[in-house]
Image (tube, rainbow, N blue to C red; front, side, top):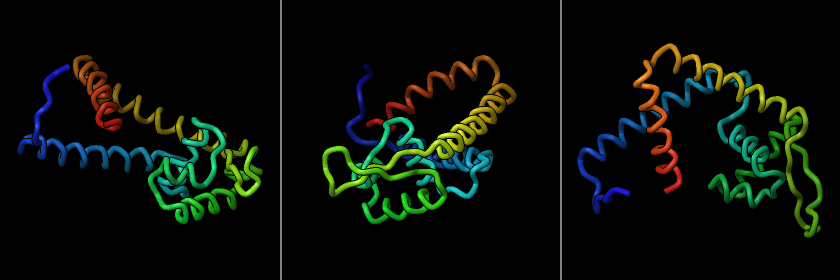
Length: 149
């Protein structure tokens, strides 16, 4: 592992700005390629979390998404109205409910992911040469580390 700088440099700050702009542009483009345009980014994130992690309470989802429980209740309410999530009694705490994806919700999520991944794979194939693809693969590992720090 390499030595870490104690304080961010001017170059680090510039890189942070450029990375933030580039990630924002990429996310907007991915959303534009999504067939589920009526869903908010938070709704899509909650759907993905329920798909990956399984059923969860409002409080657990709010913590995971770093939003207030009241905001998560609104998000879940909108998803429930659309038939994307369903609620059921908590298995051990009768005061709580757990939310999970419905079959329609899972189908919609699969469709969204497929559209985004197809667009991105085609963009990588068309815009990057072999060396740039290798660099991108290396950068993905770094981006994951940054996201987890």
